[in-house]
Amino acid sequence: MMIALTKVTASAPGKVALFGEHAVVYGHQAMAGAIDRRVRVTVEQRSDDLIKIHAMDLSIPGIVLTIGGLGKDVSIETDYVRIMDAVGYIRKAIEVTSSHCGIKKGINVHIKSEMPVGAGLGTSAAVSVATILAYSTAMGHELKSDEVSALGHKVELEVQGAASPMDTAVATRGGILLIRPLIGKASITPVKVEQGLPLVVGYTPRECGTGEMLRRVRNLRDAAPESVDSILCSIGKVVSEADSAMRSGDLRRVGMLMNVNHGLLESIGVSTKKLNEMVYSARSAGALGSKLTGAGGGGCAIALCPGREQDVMTALSLAGGTAFRSSISGKGACIEKGESS
Ligand code: MEV
Figure 1 (cartoon, rainbow, N blue to C red):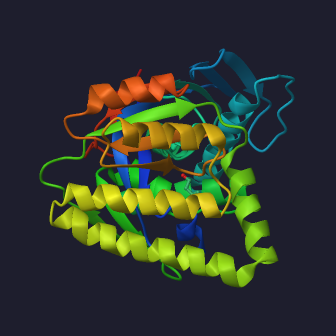
Figure 2: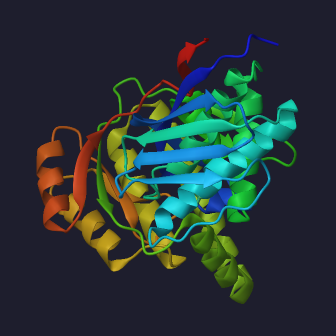
């Protein structure tokens, strides 16, 4: 047990799903990498049991929300559906940490994000993991990295109804990870890419959240189990070919496999017209490969484009997206600041 602190700031990175999203929820392997944009969560002790969440910089209008104590209901009216999604993850993260560590103390929570929330860049995992780390540390509990990641996975499972351990593992550890979801415990291995992975991300607002996209894939699989299972299985095979291409530094092959993965994701209904336009315009502008990333239904596309970043950013903007460069970051979740009174 460490000393409790009055104020703690923790941060966690966003992620791009490089290969295997959706299929990973059905036990196939996937590969994802942490990006150089982070979510910061500051937790401040209160003298009562209220939880007050300040979410003022989430690329959508800010909001302050007060919850009447741990485990009690939130009452709020808002049009900002995505903020309510983010608040759901923060609340659940506080709840699971409170019951895991046996703590029951009120806090003020301040969230800031360097990336759009709910866009498919793993902000829900980053928010959950950073909240778990900041809250437990403020209360004097030192959690192991595996515990943080497992609690984060529990948050996603409970909020979304289904989730793989991929996003929370990446938010906790950083770097590129190969995730094999085995029964009981996932096998997670770091993937080193010597020459780096120059990516451009294109963002458009999402039509629906991760939970809804997961439900749609489940419904499609229920309606056509053999076809959908064979597509999910093919996605798993793309991931193992991508793993060898990554390890041998063959970026052309990595790009080609991103294109194959996008086609397979489209066939299970998670792409949109806008995402396809971004994906194809990136390829026309010289990307080695491009695909949607994350749960889909809008959100983000990624393009692998060494030396052609500017051209691809222009193409993504012309296709109606907001484009930014992104690189893989080895920095996982961490405590940035702790203060005692
Ligand atoms: C979402 O970032 C990735 C999905 O595969 C869901 C998950 O792995 O939990 C769609």
